[in-house]
Length: 103
Image 1 (tube, rainbow, N blue to C red):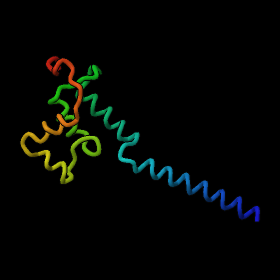
Image 2: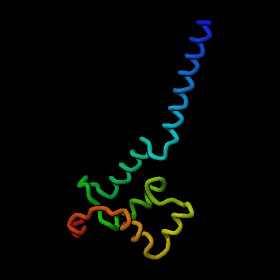
Image 3: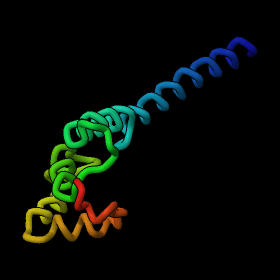
Image 4: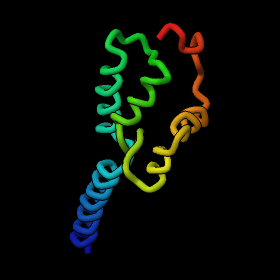
């Protein structure tokens, strides 16, 4: 009976690790997403100032794609309508530095 309990415990540990790894890999926001964001940000902020212009933000979101940017889902197709991107960016309520005049 002890052998069976230890075997069941061993199998449970292996299955739990598999589930943890599966969930980690299939999260929308994971390490790969962060790395992709960092690489895309470098394109728009090569001097690493930490700031980009509002126009660059639109391009950054287009570059990123889903889940951080704009992809091809039905909801995001609405963003192709006039003013929709601007309204979306305004809805993010991002802080503006110097009204983005220096960037």
